[in-house]
Image 1 (tube, rainbow, N blue to C red):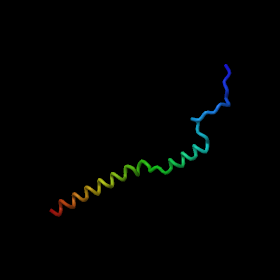
Image 2 (tube, rainbow, N blue to C red):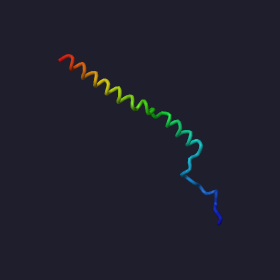
Image 3 (tube, one colour):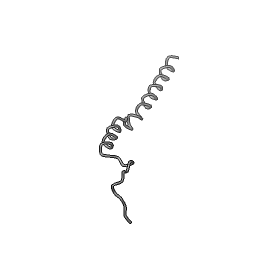
Image 4 (cartoon, rainbow, N blue to C red):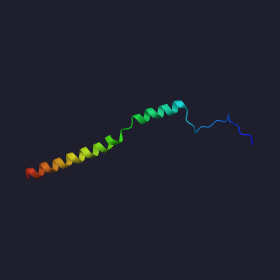
Length: 56
């Protein structure tokens, strides 16, 4: 069986493409940050409800 190894394989990434992908992944927010935003909003909502219950 003879297999040509000089054929063009488009689905394999080059080193430049991989390094570009890594820099794109660095711009994605962290897991803790994404959980911190809803937690802060929930805490602010709870604080607002508590303040309203004190005023009434």
